[in-house]
Image (cartoon, rainbow over all chains, first blue to last red; front, side, top):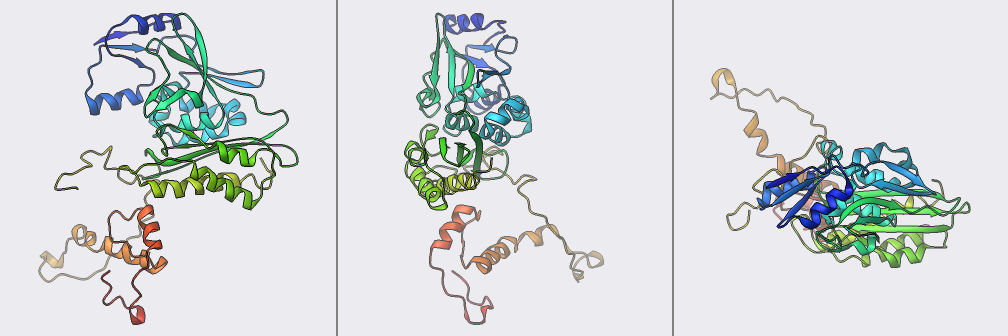
Amino acid sequence: MEFYRPTTIEEAVELLGRLPGTVKVLAGGTDLAVEQEFLHPRWDALVSLGNVAGLRGIREEGGALALGAATTFAEVIRSPLVQRRARSLVEAARTVGSWAIQVQGTIGGNLGTASPAGDGSVALLALGAEAVLRGPKSERRVPLHEFFTGPKRSVLARDELITEVRIPSAPAGARLRGTFLKVGKRQAMAISIVCAAVEVAQAEGGQVLDVGIAFGSVAPTPLRAREAEAMLRGRRLTVDLVRQAAAAAAAETRPIDDVRGEAWYRREVAAVLVERALAGCLNGAA
Amino acid sequence: MRRGIPWNANFTDYILPTTVDSPEILTEIVESPNAMGPFGAKGVGESALVPTAAAIANAIRDATGARVTQLPMTADRVLAALRTPSPPRPHGGEGKGEGA
């Protein structure tokens, strides 16, 4: 297996396009290490991003938030910018693995792995984020609801690198509330049985200006509950509306039975998580 | 275990409770000398393990009315048991005859 340490994004992308066989991109390595340990795969090349400039950093761009793909979950948790704009991402980052994983694992890596249970991915989906993909000749921006195509599958091409994740600006003057809730087989270091990210932007009077509800582990990919969101946009939240929206969101899920849980339970808990997440917005307080 | 094959053959899949999962464990030593042990000593580890699952199952039954009969007694199993009509408590609630 060959090991490469490019120093620029261009160099990295060139390698991805040129190297034959199975080429893996190494950022934090938290998913790769597990894959190697359990599957003993044959990799022909590892392209390390450790020395590549331009993949880190969190900055504001006209209200939108741009995060380098190699931003670690620990950096997400500590960032005042993310805490203000994308609370659900901060909370999701806190539930990823353990502290040791959080200081290594990256949001770009989480997207690249494309697990339907990816906590960071679910929060970013609820935030309406897009991924910036750099190819050899061009760059494209893919909204996350179009990024995932199946369990551990995405539109990321072989010769493309995720360089940035962009969270759009919130409606002007809105009060934002973001929550991430996760149920697993234990309180830490657990892949979710079901998780939910809910982001709400409310006007001064409490009307919902925008809302994002996304689930993990209830479908082949992270899932947005569009119909439930539509029920809430433009409305003021009441206990009944929240309950209805939670039920609608759960009805949109397509869970399966697997080693971690059964479909019926996932669907039930999905509704509970959405109801809990929205309950905090009932009095309009941020 | 399924058909004699362990399905959680590593600690990544066989997940143990972490410090944030464990409840506070209060220990009470029962001083009851064992005539067969040296100086009356008795093993504490193995004996304490035997009734624990049953005690927890009975506590769940007492608190919720639900009888869980599978281990581990996870949240989904408790929820399913809460929805399943449980056999009525025996007269006096003494626990005699509670086999279901």
